[in-house]
Image (cartoon, rainbow, N blue to C red; front, side, top):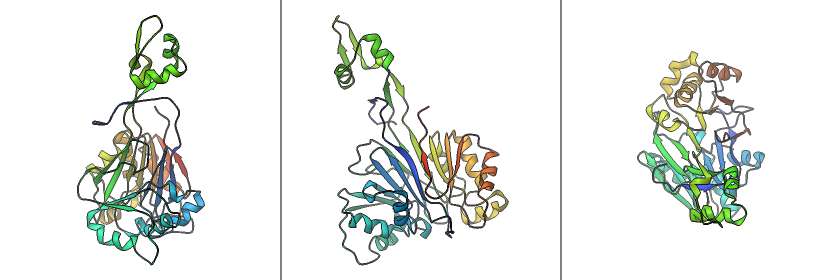
Length: 323
């Protein structure tokens, strides 16, 4: 990403995955809780759109409140925000020590203030409320305390109320190649010195640079696009990402209803993914009117041939391995 430092890494990596906590749209069902999605990225944990019941779903998924380093809401409809009071109170109960930023559309600030103080409790967690007024980077990346260097970007979507989608980008870096290290005879602690200093003088007087033993490595990326019609922002967020999580409330036979209520069909969501070069697509936010989830898959497969997940509650979807 422009303006981000170039770093050098080995192949060691912590878990990077999406934990799906809920997949329903306005009306939950027996099998689908209201929305909730935790992106685990090394030591960062971004909780997107905690709908009603998110705290219980976290328990079922084995997700600790302390793993949340940021909360990001796309908009203030209830199926995307009514779980916020329980999550905030759980953060306080567990005495989470780090500041937790909470980003949301600025027009929703009155409701955010009510939600975080919805009932009597002892506020022991420090929240950093971040109302969004325009497209661009969100302050604080994945959240204070997270060691991972990430850029979180928000873009305004086209829904019936103010709504923003989010994109997570890791800085580009370099990957150290063992065969090149061996060719130069660099091993052990000297590898760390080469990476840290950028160059190393060998015993025979030659100088080896970090670039001589590494290859460029594109940073990984993820986008989160909830309630919206087809719009330029959805395409910008999805452009070239490794993992796209996107709403597909309706099927194409109800495209007029999708347009009226500010939503996507499975086909339209999959078309955005296909035309944006997405590697792994996660469809979610399903209307209760469609009992057969396979219909979403069939419709999406008409236009998208990459990795596809029609999400179910408690699914864990990995960020794809590096290309």
